[in-house]
Length: 130
Image (tube, rainbow, N blue to C red; front, side, top):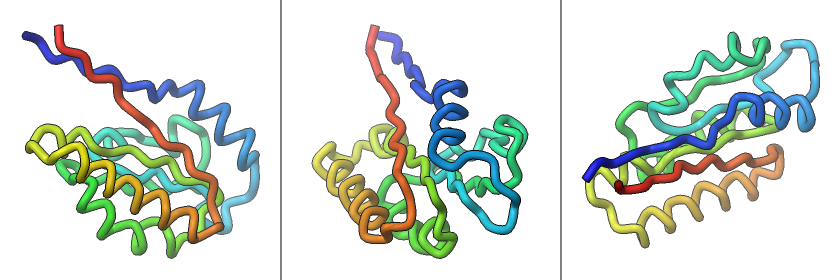
C-alpha cells in the first residue's frame, strides 16, 4: 500500500482568504499567524503572500498536544486578526488515537474562539491509502 497525502492548502485560497479578511495594511504588528507543524514551517509565507505582517509558527514533528501547549505564546499574545491552523499528521504517524486528536483540536479552536481577536482558518489534509 502506498500512503498518499494531499494538502488542500491551495495558495490561491490562502491568498484570497487573507486579502478578504485582513486586506492590505501597514506593518505595525503581526496580523496573521500561520500555526502548526512542519507543513506550516516549510512555507515562506511573507514571500509567498507579499506581506510582512505574518508570523510563521510552524513546529516540525510536533503533535496537536504540543500545539495546545504552544498556542498562547505563539498565537494569543500576538492578537492576530487571522490564524491559519494546521496539524495532526504527526499524531497519526505516532499512533495517537483519533479521539485524542479531536480533543486537542477542540482545545485549540476553543482557545482561539475565547481570544475573540482572530478569525480561524483550519486546514486539513486528505489522506488516502492506495
